[in-house]
Structure formats: C-alpha cells, structure tokens
Length: 246
Image (cartoon, rainbow, N blue to C red; front, side):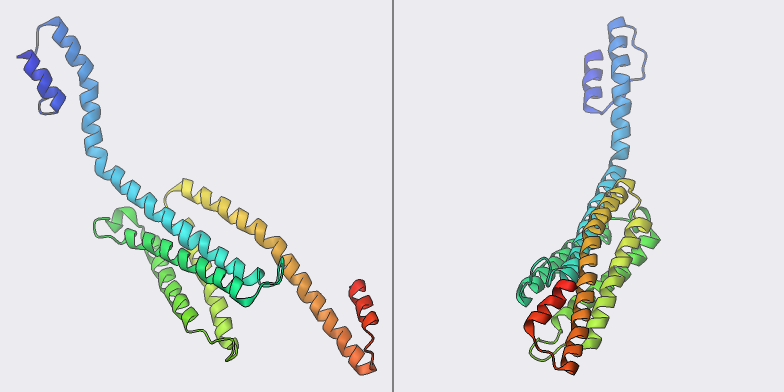
C-alpha cells in the first residue's frame, strides 16, 4: 500500500496526508512533502511565467527594431553623406533604407505579438504603452509609404516633402523612446536601452560637431567667393590661402 502511494505521489496523482505508522515511510513522505509543494507552485505559476516570457520577447523586438535600428538609419542619412568620406547617393541611401526597413520589420513583429489575442493586454501591455506604440506604428507606416512616394533625383527635390519627412522621423524617435521608458515594466530592458542611447549619443555628438564645422566653413568660403567676384579676384593661389586661413 505504501509503495503504491509513493508511485502515485511521484506521478502527481495523489498527495499523502493519511497517517502512516512505519518510521521509514514517514521519513520518505517528509522528504517528498516540500518537493510536492514546489511542484504545485510551479504548476500554478506556469501561465504567469509564459506571459512574462512573451512580454520580454515583444519588448526586446521593439527595442531592437524601433528603438535602435530606426535611430541608426536616421544617423546614416544625416551624417554619412559626406563624412568621413564623400559617398555616392546610392551608397548612403541604400544603407539608410535597408536599416529603416529591417528596423520596421523587427519592431512591427514585436508590436504584433503584443496584440496577439492570447496575450491579455490588461496584464501584458499597459494603457500608456498601447497608446504610444499604436501612434508610433501609424507614423512609421506613413513614413515608410512616403519613402516610396519620394520624388526622383532627376525630377528635383520637394523641399516641403523633405521637411515633413525629417520632422516625422524625429517625432517617431521621440515617441519610441517615450514608449520604452513610460510603457515597459522591465527595468533591465530600460537600463539596457539607456546604454544604447548613451552609445548613440557618443557617436552623434562628434558627427554633429563635424557637420556644423563643415557648414560654417562652406558659409565662409561662399562669403569669400562673393568678395572675389565683386573685386574680380580669380587667383586660385589666393583661394587656397583663404582655405588655409579658415
């Protein structure tokens, strides 16, 4: 009888609470008691653990796709057209589009997982995260569609289109960053993203300084060229001297 009870206990079909008078059997049951309780706790905690795993998966995808790759694509478009060397239009533009496309796919996959019917939004997705991520998803789709509707270089650039494209891109980055810090509950992911932002900031600051310096130098050169045109100075050696002075 005791041996059958032990088998049932092992299979999880019977929890012995009946008095057993044999000393050895009491010792065995006392040793099995904590393990049985632990198995019961694990069985009840399985859905919560699965929810946490799902939450971590979709948040990681959104962090990598929308939170990291999209800003990298913006950095490529803003700083790597002429620095550190002059790139052709096809090179930097393809890198920009490729980075944005991969980021869009990865981040949108995470966003779709968060909307999966089995993942209860009340437990996995906060109201702030749901609202911000939906707005960001809408803006990102508009941005991606606008990219394919862009005027060709031969036709000429539309200044209004460029301004809207840039402003919408910066708004998307702001929404994504706000969504990560305001909507995510995982503190570890938040600190990881802080590290990502620090790295991106360290990269952006010197690039922005070089870009501003280049604009200032171009402006000064244009001023000197205007002065040369007024005075009829066309000596190339003098122009080179001005460059050295700048």
